[in-house]
Image (cartoon, rainbow, N blue to C red; front, top):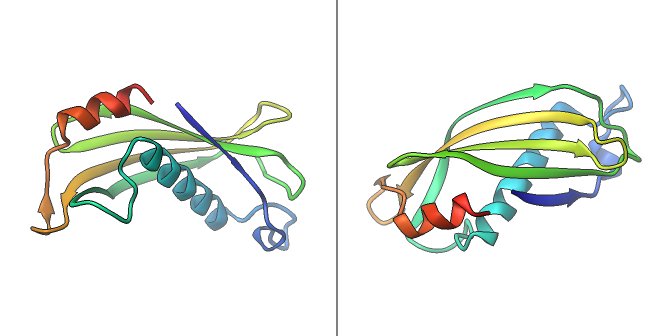
Length: 129
């Protein structure tokens, strides 16, 4: 599992006084980017990458401006051409799970613009993150 602390910005908070749900999606994206970069596949380089083909989110607790939060990211399943990832936004002070995101990503080859199998060495790296 990979953990990324998140700095809540002033403009992340909406008129209701909590972090807006659309901003929470940005936090999940930051977590995925950091996770894959740590695994050796940064999003901006190489012929192989992954693209999101499905996601679902449950918002379970409000996040406020002064909360200390982190995004955790872990692989739940790896198939031949897809990876299922589960992420949580955790309030680091209370331990409360504020949101859960389940994402399916497909392997993609940039040079051929087509789906691609997940390389075996990458599967091993991702399962050990």
